Amino acid sequence: MTSDAIALNDMSSIELLNDGVDILRKNFGDVKTEAFISLIIREKFDYTQWRRRFFGDKSVKEINADAVAYATEHPFVPKKELAPVKRG
Image (cartoon, rainbow, N blue to C red; front, side, top):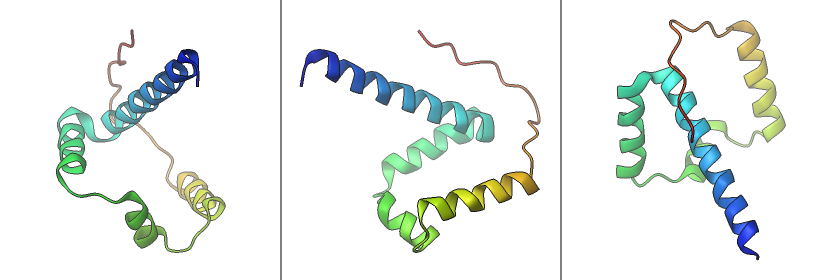
């Protein structure tokens, strides 16, 4: 693997983390976002086990279809606009 590939993978991870935090901030606000991240770090969290318990044997397509149906029935209307996160 070249250093360019490693940098690209690192950048993708950073972008994913930034996008995730942006989503959390928009939905939870700053304080609840920090509490959520602290909880995930503090607890022994197994995403695969959680996913199986929460979604059962549903496929990704089924989960997506459920999410689309929910979003259609419950459109998102922000309570207030948050300041954009500055990215360097």
